[in-house]
Figure 1 (cartoon, rainbow, N blue to C red):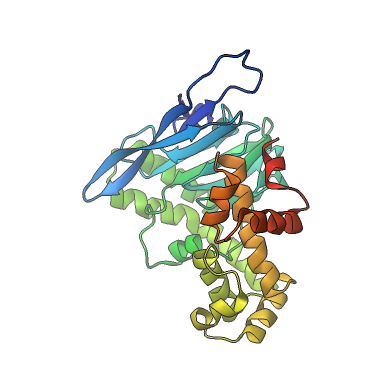
Figure 2: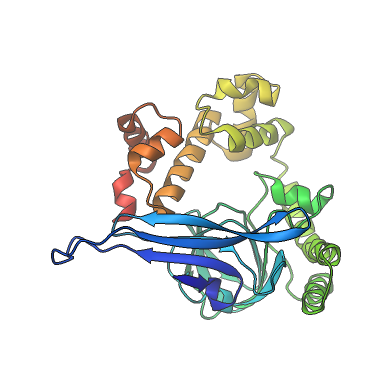
Length: 327
C-alpha cells in the first residue's frame, strides 16, 4: 500500500500487516511492498523501489522521501497536518531530515523512544534514521521542513550542524523572531515558485540558519562538548556495529581510553563504555520497532557472534527482551 506521510505528500510510506495467529487456518504468503525513494543520480532524480517483507503479525512502517513535487529535495508542511495519517501513533524511521518549529498549541512526541512535550518556541530536528512517534499533535501549530541528506550544500555551518552526531535535537527559539519568520516565509515562497535546485538549497540554508544559531548558543552555554568527545561520538556513529570496545576507537579519536572516558563523562555524565553500549542498544531497539528483522539476523548485523549474547546484552541494557518490543 502506498501512502503519503501525514497525507501531505511529503514522503512515501509503505505499510503492511501480516495476518496474526488467529487466521482461521488460512495460509497467506508474506506481504511485499515497495517504498519509492527519489535518489540523486547525476543530473536527474531516479525513483528506486526498496522491497520490504513482512512475515510476522507486526505492522512495519517504512518511510522514504517522496515529495509531491517531483525532483524537489525540500518540502515545507504545516503542523499538525504532516503528523496525520498512518504515521499517527506509530513508530516510524524516516530516511530524511525533519525540522519542526512550534508556533502555538501544545503536544507530545517521542524521539528514539524518549517522550518530549512540545509547545510554542520548541524546535526539534530529527536526523535520518531516528525513530519518531507522534503521541499528541492535534493542538499543535507550526512548520515542518522535510529534506533529503543531500539537499544542503556542504561546506557551511548549517550542513556541518546537520551532520554532527552530538548536536542537540531539541532547543528553543522565539517563534516571533523576524529572522525566523522571514527565513521560513522566504523558503515557502521559493518552493512555491519554479525555482532551481541551487536556489532551493540556498533558501533551505537561510531558513535553518537562525535555528542553528539558537541551538549553537544553547550548546555554548553548556560548554561540555570537547573535541575528543566529538571525535569519539562521530567514530562510534560510524563503527559501533563492528567495534564494541572503547579501546577500538583510540586511533580514530587520537586519544587513549582514559582521555576518551573523561571526555564522555564530562559531556554526558556516563562512562565511554556505557555511551557505546547505549548507542548499540538504541540501534537494536530502532530496528526491532520498525522492521521485521529476526533476532538472529540483527545480532549478526550488530556484531554479536551468538544471538544468545545479543539477547543478554539487550536485557542488561533495557531490562526487557528483544521480543517484548513487538508485543
